[in-house]
Image 1 (spheres, one colour):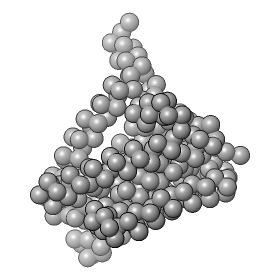
Image 2 (cartoon, helix red, strand yellow; image 1 turned 90 degrees about the horizontal axis):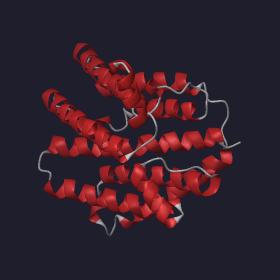
Image 3 (tube, helix red, strand yellow; image 1 turned 90 degrees about the vertical axis):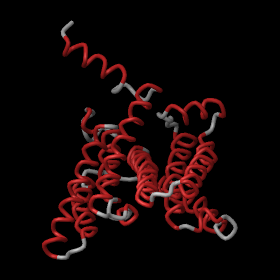
Length: 263
């Protein structure tokens, strides 16, 4: 066996054949390294990470939309179009859009955030022309559960100071969208959870409704730690941006995969 074949066999076994504890840890390490360099970039250019939450949403739709189309056989299954390859590519495009936005802003005073949003929107719209049809019943089910669960925390913000911060609420809502899409897909349409920890909990309980307490407990605890102990403003906001993206990306992927796949 040549070195090239051995490397390809290793990658296929440990990275391209579903989520395992090993590759989940590796992806986590890569994510930490990427966040470190992104923090450096934000500090160098004096950018507020929170300002990028909405401009980056089209890029999240781009990556998640491509992944959903792969799930349904519309795009071919290869490393560049599945997790994590597609998110590395889309993340690189987003960073390039940030630099382009900053350059245009320097030359014309046109707000860099609009440039980022426009670039992402154009790329995402082109991708969504490939969607054949969607199931409106599924859309209604997921959106209804998501709205109700988010509304609970909007109302509870009067008593829970953590969610009086709108950014914290946005972050949790993104993860509640992920929980809603996963719950509907697994419990009502026979899908299964791919990630290691949620899948283990599902196997113990037999229902994906456990995604809600899991998300609420973990995200609330992490946000509390960031707010209480993270003194560096750029670092804390970058972490919240990253957690928001980590919630919304799989949420949109699951939502679109389900709405396209259920006839």
